[in-house]
Length: 70
Figure 1 (cartoon, rainbow, N blue to C red):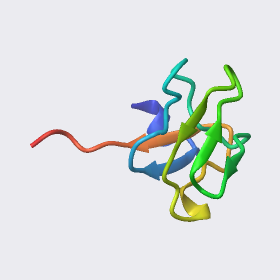
Figure 2 (figure 1 turned 90 degrees about the horizontal axis):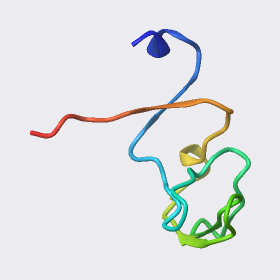
Figure 3 (figure 1 turned 60 degrees about the horizontal axis):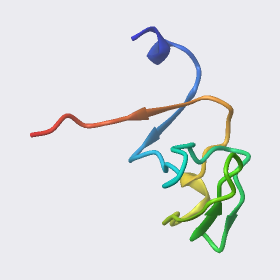
Figure 4 (figure 1 turned 30 degrees about the horizontal axis):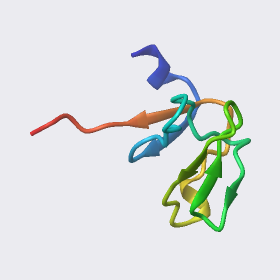
């Protein structure tokens, strides 16, 4: 829980994972037309849905807030 105390970027929603290698969309990722991400690790093309620039990671470390199942 100490990571929540640090000054990392906080994001809501789910992280985008590569369908092939399970790499995570990050601030260095290139997303074309907010829909296509070519994974930096395995070059697999992934369909993603990024509605606006605020949804793209902007820093090296991102903490995702997830909601517990009902």
